[in-house]
Length: 322
Image 1 (cartoon, helix red, strand yellow):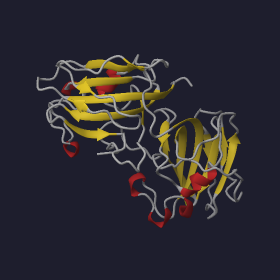
Image 2 (tube, rainbow, N blue to C red):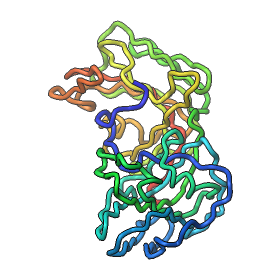
Image 3 (cartoon, rainbow, N blue to C red):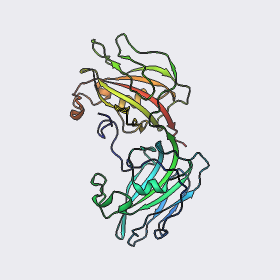
Image 4 (cartoon, one colour):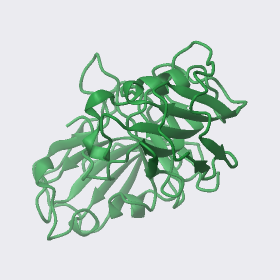
């Protein structure tokens, strides 16, 4: 299972379908949808006013706040706070906003054509607004997962925060490989998942946190948005049930972002505060801090009372206060 299932660690969000950016200079498209008004400061929830009128069929986009950071790189994943509205006829409704739940990592291998155009050569620190008619969004089929039909226009507001290579990994100093009564973790080449070898003994009854690579970056705190790679193993079966690293030589890995203290497994929220960026850590999570004795996740082969092992690379962080 290469891409983590929505039910395993975090729920699917509406903004998980934005691509990386191209290399040509952005220009303002048709200004027909200029009646959409967006105000507010960078990285704070924007005020969006959408007119009670039918949207145009033309793509429209503009940079409301020009950032001084680096230009976005084609093929990299972009960390952004976003607000997304659905504009249907003369009505509009909020689909998703990440400002209170943590910035969203937007993978480079998924895309909406209008957003790719709108973000070409955009710079970090910028706020971009894009009004996407169906032909520049999900087409005539729409996206039933987020309640978008083939006739809906989308209004995106994006605050561009950071970028990461999809194959980014921990860069810290090696301090352990686990072992003993805990799993042993290999050290593969950059871009490859570590191998986790689970011993034959019973798992620990309490949460175990082992630092494998010690990074020199800032410490994680509750509320931060964390960018990571991970591999998850079921202690009972000793098999991988999910990972972000690519299993194909032709494909990029899938970095994973989440809000620490948010809707991830309790074992992650308890075990990761204080870990430094650049680190690789191993969490052995007992059932009570995973899916619980009455839980489990059948689609991933996880049964009730299963202990889970995660090896997690902390690639980056967006502090909650930033």
